[in-house]
Length: 346
Ligand code: KG4
Ligand code: ZN
Image (cartoon, rainbow, N blue to C red):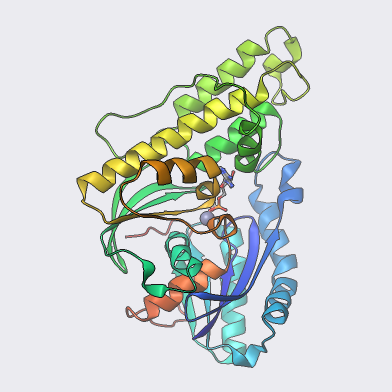
C-alpha cells in the first residue's frame, strides 16, 4: 500500500510517502523554527498560520521527491491528535479535502502511535527484526513523557507519564535559561559535548513509581544558573544568560541532560523488569538525544529499538507507517473524525 502521511500536530508541516509501512519514498519536513525562535517557544496561532502557508508546497515536494503522481496513492494518513488544535485542524482538513478529491481512503492516526511505529519504519531490510511482545515504549517529546506497555499491535497499557513538565519541555526551558535558542534539546546536547565536568543536578525518582517529574529539576537548574550568574546582576532577571561567558554553560547543560536521561533510562528499565518485556522502543523528539540512546543501549539487557534521529522528531512517515500496520489490525478508513487535541493512546 502506498500511503501519504501528513503530520501537523505541532510546529512541523511534514509529509512523506511510505510503501507498505516500512519503505520511505520521500520524507519532507518543513520546520517553523525561525518563526518561533524569536518568542523562545511555540506560539500556537503562529504555528497554525504557518501550516496553512506550507501544506500545499510540502505536499507537492513530497510527491515530487518520491517521483509519484497523486493518482498512484492508495490512501492518506493524517495525525488527528494529540496536539495543538489549530495546527491539527489544518492537517486534518487538508487531508479530508485531498482524500475526497482523489477518491482514496483516509485514516486518522494518533500522533503517539506514529512515534511508536517510526521504529518499524526504520528497518527496511528485515521487517522481522522486532522482538516479540510485550515491549516497553518510552515516548518522550515536547508534549509527552510516557511509558507504555505494548502487548501487541494496537494493544497498549499506559504505565506512567509525567506529573508536570514533559522531558522535551524541560530541555527547551533549560536551553532558554542558558540563552541558547529553541528547540532546546539539540542545543543542550551540543553544549554537553563540550563539558569538562557535570554540574550536579537532582533527580526526582518518585520511588517505586513509573511516573516522571521534571519541574523540580527545572527549578533547581534555574536557581543554579542564577546563583552562578550572581556576580552579573543582569542575569538574575534575564532569561538570557548567554552574555556571561564565565558561566559554565556546557557543564550546566551536561549536568541537566544527565539528570533527565538518567531518570528516563532508570524508569524504562524498571518497567522492562516489572513486565518481563522483550524489548524497548523509544520515540519522540527526546529519543533523538545521543546520550539517552547511548545510556539505554549500554544499560538495557533487552534489545533497544530507536529510529534514526530525523524519524524521532515529528514527521509524516511515522503517520503513514502507523496507518499501514493498523489497517492490518482493522483500522477503517473514515472522513468522519475531527482534530482531537487531547486524544489518548488507550
Ligand atoms: O516529537 P517532537 O518533534 O514534537 C512533539 O511531539 O512535541 O519533540 C520535540 C521535542 C522538543 O522539546 C525538543 O527540544 C526535543 O524534542 N528534542 C530533543 C532533541 N531533539 C529534539 N531533546 C533532547 N535531545 C535532542 N537531541
Ligand atoms: Zn511528536
